[in-house]
Image (cartoon, rainbow, N blue to C red; front, side, top):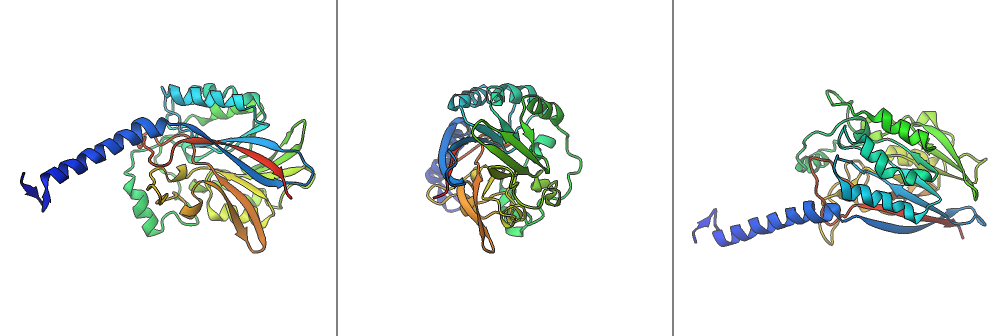
Length: 312
């Protein structure tokens, strides 16, 4: 067979077939291969009993995603002490009822939530390669994206009302409290830094010392938010947004984080240090994708069950 651009056609055909097979795997299998990550975090005061927190993030619900809905419903069988939803529930303006249905069993448990940009605004088609270009240009820097212009607004208010009616606590640039039978927990939350809705000055001042323990919650783990939480003395910060890199290279990891967090901390448990203070940071890889890029590779969708234990 003749070569094209110096590459034998058999090789070209083989590469094309491999790429097609990879796309089928990324979209048809891995993006629907939901799993649970389990982690232990030693952050509670000495003598306090263990707490089990289920973190769900970046659901990006599209109408008709029955497998995702059933999987989310099944997580209630874990019977967590409380639930933290770190935002980006929507990728379809008509999917609010399906989000509420999928999370319905989990809303039987105490919970808190923050919103992400995709809760407020509908997604638009976007070439994934642009993330690499923007990273090289430093466009996902300390300030996140510019103001949203011309975007379609999602009907996020009924979703918020559903969360509130179930007793989940809205942490949009504010503080909240969950009084559990075993513990009195405080939370400090921010609106999404990715679209510059975070207002840390409204919640500054450090953890609530009248509670047994305080958690910082934010959708996108931009360094300015992590720095502020850590400098104020929060021992645990929960975030989402990154999708774990979404398209990763096996044995290497993520190429981008879609914020200014380094790729070594794109998902899972790590630490964040400011001056002489260090916080535990957990970034969820989330369980969904933007509806226009419904693929994952070497980064399966997930939720996380974190067992908080007492410090040694």
